[in-house]
Figure 1 (cartoon, rainbow over the protein chains, first blue to last red):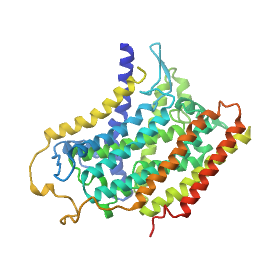
Figure 2 (tube, chains in turn cyan, orange):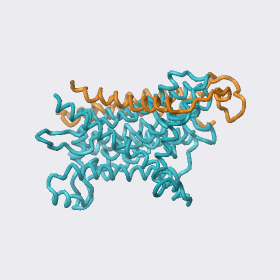
Figure 3 (cartoon, one colour):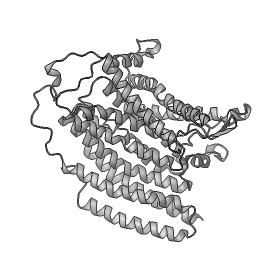
Amino acid sequence: MLETLIEIIAKIVVILALPLGSLPLIIHVERRGAAFIQKRLGPNRVGPFGLLQPLADVAKFMFKEEVIPSHVKPFFFTAAPVIALTFAILPLACIPVTGPFQFMGREIFPEVFRSEMGIFFAFAASALGSYGILLAGWASNNKYSMLGALRACAQMVSYELSLSTALVAMVFLYGSNDIHQMVTAQSGYWFGFIPKWGFFVQPVAATLFLVGIFAESNRLPFDLAEGESEIVAGYHLEYSSMKFALFFMAEYIHMIGLSALFIILFFGGYSVLPGMDMLVDLIPGSLPIFQLISLVTKVALMIWFFVWVRWTLPRFRYDQLMNLGWQRLLPLGIVNLIVTVLFVYFRN
Amino acid sequence: MDFLPFIIFFIIANVVGIVLIVISNFLGQKKKLERKNDIYESGVNPVGSTTRQYDIKFYLTAILFLLFDVEIVFLLPWAMAYTDSTNKAFMIAGFVFFMLILLVGYFFVINSKALKWEE
């Protein structure tokens, strides 16, 4: 009993420390990356390479006033950022950072909440994130906030459809909904050097999924919920201090969680990077460590991709966004699903 | 008992946000100013009320989302059950029939311009 409890706590600490601990670093990389792409300097004064800038920002957020204007609905106004952060963190419960391994005579599954339906749970929880945004926009009692929240929700639900069709295609292809089996199906190589990642089997589904996670996490080029030129800051317009920071954290953690899901489905999850197999053979018993390193590396590359896209592509117009979602990606997803199913059926 | 890790995780996920807000409430300065209570509308006085009418398209999108999301909810268990099923031809026939009905509905929605955003 005590051992079980210690195991649960240890897993929770690891799965929360990874994203929350790397959050300042990610924000720093984002700002320096923006500066790099735009030929600016970026934050480089506080600490070496400006690395302490995010910590200074956190301190400043802490010491700012929590303004609750008189026109808002105070309870929901305060609850909204907490809800947004909760549902951003929740999907992480089902994401395994390594494969199952033996430790002190116990077989340990690294996800906090071990379930056969893990991947569906993660998607359901991350989709609930739109409630935080909708609540924030409604409780703020501000036209810009309300418009931002409506836009964010319409956008998130629209892109969830094409994302889910891609998910169905992948679940069908792997023949299993268990994350560990999905990752096992993706380990190994074709011709000795191309990894058997889902991306190479289903590039269309991967593209749909990638566009979907950009829209789900409200990142540019689908940043319509906070289009500065139209609705100032969208749903978090009336927020200040730590409550604003919570929305910020929620967005980044949401990004990390969705990236991890994308990598599990299309880039082999925690299966070791090509070339790392030799190292694993060299040091016995080091497989979980290298798996953890592989997953973190893949997620880090994915985050850099987010930053790269954000500072390269301009924002869409709202009608373009909705047309892309409903009239291009959704039919593409459905056709891709039908083709996949028929291909698998007639191959046998 | 199986859900114990999940319950602990859920509580911790909530506590993170609540604790941060409470800390900032204690540390932050408090200065009451009448101007801080104004609705922010780009610096000018607020015009009209927030409970105005919004575009019907947002609601149509939500309703159509429900329709297509139910489709996904039906397809997920189908995709999981396919591997273990004995009569695969029947599964495929059901799938194709279902998708055809869905596509008819989809083209009806597109043709009736329910999702046309540009004026």
